Image (cartoon, rainbow, N blue to C red; front, side, top):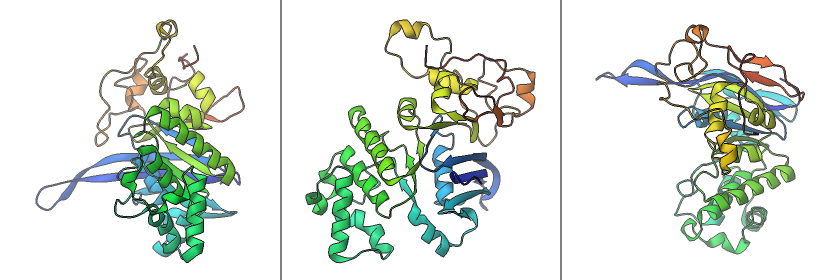
Length: 342
């Protein structure tokens, strides 16, 4: 593991059993995450994108061990000490989790409606015996200021706030323990577009101020482009491409990445008419019975015989800007795919 890396994921798998019959015997497995590997550098934002159901959220929850991975390792660089999160006992994991936090997707269901804002933000501080009494109130007030809310709101309940304000409360709660790594699980997907921009700008400001590292999970390419340094693209539980955000948007190397970019709306009709790539047709394969070979080949317009027989491994690809770029495609050198820069 490089000293520049904060998180390194190696061969991560999460298979959910399909149980049938009276004895609830496992008759198969849903391969929600299937052999995923990547790293995130300190202070970096890695965007994780893909269609709904491709395993993005499961990756994030496995990293935190909110759900137990089936296989693989997750390494965390804790102030120079490399810790394998997948082997920690519950007591050790609880201590490390202070530095690994999660911002949830839905600001309405993620906040307990019976708790005040003060209690919601203070809970992690109380559970970890960090602050009590007036010191606790002072820390909650500072956190509210950091996320753009007034300290006078402490005694209000979640129902008194808008969606954007609720998400700010969730962000303050995630930052209460001064984490170094935050997983943002579609933190703006439930918000209006105008509010999305405010929350994204807030996340960026907090990242700079507190030297945070983000795994930003989203299906919205515009949002990911705005906030990410690098982007990883998932399809049916596997990574198909990972690389510098600017390079991936300008010249994707995997047909699925190009199709995702083609699905992004372009307001200008002239630019839209010059677009070569078209949005995908067909259905996403069943992750409990993926097709032989490349999982994408039934929907890929460029598929060849080798694509139907052999799954392509994620391999390094030469990049003209000095950043590492990896792609899982047999035909990456031959294809000239179109990005969003037309």
